[in-house]
Length: 86
Image (cartoon, rainbow, N blue to C red; front, top):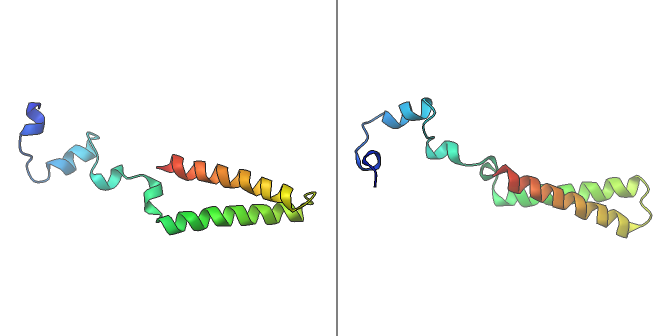
C-alpha cells in the first residue's frame, strides 16, 4: 500500500480533490445509463423496436418480415447505445 492510501483524509479533502480533478466522488463516477432503471431501459428498447417496425411498414416494406428485420437492426443499435452510455 502506498502512503497516500494509508493516511487519513481530513473532512472536505475529498471535495477539494474532486474539484481539482484528482478523483471524482462515487456519485460522479456512475455512468449515464445507470440513471435509467432497468424497466426504463427495457421500455426504451421496446419502443425503438415498435416504432421502427411501424415506420418500416408505413414506408412500404415488402412484408412484415422485412419490417421486423429492420426493427431488429434498430433494436441492436439501441442496445449498443445503452451499453456504451455506461
